[in-house]
Length: 498
View 1: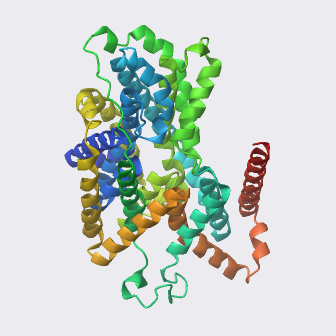
View 2: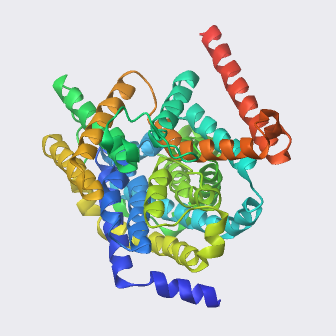
């Protein structure tokens, strides 16, 4: 109780609350605009958190994360264009409800279900994180190397249709992470006599370039080939069309519980993501429904299942990040950068050395969830207007923010050019079907994998088989091989059958 009171005192400051609200508004608007996405919003906001206290900066990033994941449902419902991949399942029934004159009901239901999913996920984070951190204290170099390889493999496999391209993208991220000083011997490598590269490639330049600049280039290309913009449906002023009765909400409660549980579980597994959670929850809800024929025709259960699951991911993705230092998805990988800039190293020792900070962060997660309900309800008319922002105004502004944010974070023109270079790399990856998330996660996990492997080799006198002598590291490496083999075999069968 004493630690709870200390944590509450740390997080319950005016600056933190204001930044939570700002983050929620920015996240919902970014999520609602087709073409933008939550990683882009978090990446653009990251440089501005460096000058803030750690809790204040993370409060804003968490607000963007939760608000952006929900915001995709607004455009999914109104124009049948999901603002985020996780909202694709919401569009199946949400847009039908809007076309039937019930856009207001669909929008409110998506908000309620999203907040419910977040609350359940936050509770799971609070209950499990400390217990997992205690187990992780037993990890050494062998275990951390095997865990890093397993996490990178999982993320590479689920981030795209091609197994090989996902693994190549992850390996490229590790390669970029090796630029600069050798972490063990201190020698410069892959700098090519460029002084600015001796300090390594900057995390913020990769993030903003690969996600924001590449997306702007993709949108420019799409406008050049004349892709049409979808029509935005108006929200009816009829009270009955915008109201959800208490009886309807009680009837939908089991679906919301089930979706939140699925999303929370999926979020705790690194690399799977909110989109898979939403479609899995939608499919389960349809199979268990007494009226499955209504799904896809405007079923309230469909919207509830999708939204409770995709926002149910937002809390539990922090479990592997805080306890093991392994990002649960792209957004938590960016949050890892915010933590390390402030000297906070995620992992089991964080709970020992910064217990008050962790407690304050947990309370902050719950506060953001409560504020999400208030901000989402009061600001819905504003967020609907955000869907109508012309791309010709939006994306030039995004590019300006990219350049400004990178320069503010690094104070280096060279890093601005690096950011633009990564933007071209990201654009080419999208064009040729290479997923970007494994590139980022590989860049994040590269130092952990390299340092842990080299430390393990020193301890075992360069005997690689020693990695299999410890139960935990052997288990993770065997799981990695099994996952690669099973996914490869499954996709080979699909290719043969097609």
